[in-house]
Image (cartoon, chains in turn yellow, cyan):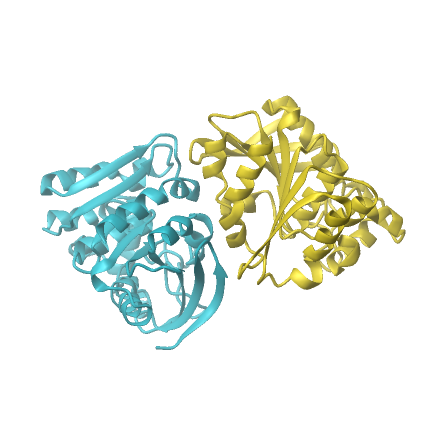
Length: 276
Length: 276
């Protein structure tokens, strides 16, 4: 595989690198970021970012490297959509569809079907790259993310519990089939048949029998997207009905920003390390 | 004083706010950032940022809030130059002069003299605001910074050791009178008479008798600006000659980025808290 190192910086006892490669799943060149602790345990965590983000937001703002170095946890952070001048974008340049808003689905509608396969990209292409190129043990890979990326983490883990052995999320979009962001994305990428949407919604996946060992979710109470878009109560209801062990922590006064993530990322990294 | 809160977010056990006010020293509207721990000790640290930065870089990338909350340390982070459409900028838009590059001096040359008074802004206007509006004890204020801001921290502390009781720096420009960034800035803001430059150079200030209790400096060995612009050996020589207690730590493999700052900010905050 042809992978180029774009940048490398020492951070705590490890190295933060950004790589560039030619993605076959997305049919374009992509950046992704990897934090490699000097004393790697063999375990790794996927971090999926939210709307408008690239591979850079998490690695510069979350402050995850300190605890990742201590735990020996490798962290891989992909971009949030295919990229480049040839990639179709929302015709009005909206922040919640197209570039920066891949929603971790495999699109089936034109023109998105040509490139927007973020599900395959994370679930298969980057996953195999992590195992083959970075020496990560298949039995020690977890997944987490924020907002749209929290939706991605939950749905990938529920669909493939053998691949992603631990899962957590920050302020996830808990049920894209039941919120405006999700309606727009799922209709756009997958078309009008809502049956096809159910594999991209943590709540409907659980209703349809998907499961996972345990889920940790942190959600700020001052998050402006809480009521209309995120709806953690729907995830709580689905987990209760299916007997899935959900730890949902409502964090008083915290908003939707990386300030919120940076405050609780240590808890999440330790949660994953204890399970991987 | 007329101060507006632009934004506020919970981070660890405290609140990160950005304020906007009308600066009399700079003759324009300015943003500055304050991290206020819930359990404030009464001590505060000024953080001065480097070239191209605003008040935002440190608060989103340094990961300082975790330890600041633990120590009860308030942190105030100003912007790096006057701002606004009416403020003169480098005619070629250079990153190292004009907007984002105030160099913590009081300019005397036209057209900079109208607005570029970052020395007065930090040393007097924001300092008094911190005491009057935020309840900080005058005897418990320290100062730190990065690169151009490290130069700012060192020179402000050396000129006013009674106002800034503790001082540290990350990869500071140690002697602006002896490097290209400094030559350009000092000639531009202060004119050709190099005698006027000596109050804005840590090394010449020390040669001229200025002193401070102790100085902590971290410098990455893989910093691309180390040899031509930063020159910590000049600060080491000046401190040795003047019997100033300098702790200069060369950090192997670290570069000039916020990854470097985030790795060692905890040490610096504890250094200041122990002295304030």
